[in-house]
Amino acid sequence: MSSQHLLKSSVNQYLEELPQQIQSRLYESPATCLAIYRLLPQLAKFFIMSMVFNESAISLRDLDRWVKSSGKLQFQDAIKSMKSLHLLIPVRSNGPMLIDLNHTFRESFKNALTGGEVSNSFGIVMELDNDTVTTDMLDKYSADKWETILHFMVGTSLAHIPSENVLNLLKHSKLMEESNTTGEFKITNEGFQFLLQEVNSQLWALLLQYLKMTEMLQMDPVDILNFIFMLGALEFSKPYSTNGLSETQKVMLKDMRDYGLVFQMNSNANVFYPTRLASMLTSDPKSIRGASGAMDSVLKQNKEDVLNKSGGAGANADDDADEIGSEGQNMQDGALIVETNFKLYSYSNSPLQIAILSLFVHMKSRFSNMVTGQLTRESIRQALLNGITADQIIAYLETHAHPQMRRMAEEQLEKRLELDPNSKDPLQILPPTVVDQIKLWQLELDRIISFEGSLYSDFENHQEFTLLSSYAQDIGVLIWKDDRKKKFFVSKEGNSQVLDYAKRKLKKK
Image (cartoon, rainbow, N blue to C red):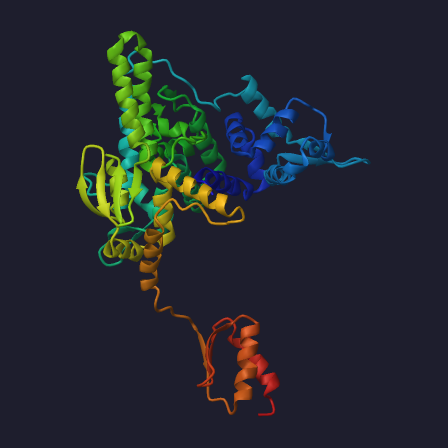
């Protein structure tokens, strides 16, 4: 499943679990309604746009007729999602079941579309005479803040570590864990998976944990969600006033600064600026695949805007644009080439991309636009000991594989299908020897597996042993048995069931 789908499912799941009263309060904000609309399935968006300007209730059967038979699964998914968010309200009638759009959501969403009564839901833009904040400043600020967090997670030596609030959030979200003896932070299995996601998925992963932390502090979740969704709707680099914010939202500004979502001249300033990261909260960046690629796109976007505006500069501008475009293409996701001898080549000069690779690759040399390394037993074992799984390493290598490797794999699959149309062989992007060896290195660490349970022995005859061991196997609690020694081991959860069965069958003894 793509990280974009993971993002939508996690955000929607959180919203669906909110009490209906809180959902209704959320729908009072046009910016929040617009953001929630963007997170819905495509078919749900179609239904909402069909109903928002229609004041009368409609039959659920009519919606079903709009969908082809091949799309019934998507139809059920859309209706389920809308009902979970209480966007569809059932209407009593003598005939077929009628539904209507949530009245509060309808009015707020209509205002968001038409520019009606939105009050300060989309922020209060300020006109400043001497505004010294530039887009370059905002890009550098957001990149520094966000990459500091990611570099800290992969263990890069940093002059400045993230703030205490960020460290608490990383620990609370189980992306990193703190050693009881040394106090050092170490990336977890979940943290490595976090690094593989797109940047807006990463942002939401932290913000959802932020929401759960604020619940413990009994802060108003409506205020927090409204502010987060509002940030996603604000215009990049525009100055916005803090006067329209609630006290909770003013407190949040400090945390949002730590994540690089907003910029303020100082903590007491009455003006804040949304960065490009804030605009990613409700966007769908299909071209962004990795953490480093996401930040490269953020930094590269402003350069492209400048070049586009200076289009009359002639051939020199075109040459510069080509140079930046080719550089961005190489840096976008750090395309990898993996050879059968376990050598690895990454076309990237991003420090973050290299730091992520060093988690499971023995790095050897670095050039201006490429690094080389080797997948070794020691490098993979060290990654496995840090909680990274073999499947995650393989998935990372496949996701960032060079396009040429992908094309060669597709050609080989097509040839196999020509020879055997019924072949069910998967697409093998990586060399099979590399994939198998990484899994074998993981099995080396899994030679001994411990279980809690009970050992049964000292049976009077083989019949008693067979009776109880067969019962334990039938109910799925048997972990190990030895027919020759007449011993078997059951799980801790199934021990009571086996004991009760033994008392019933062997009660005479």
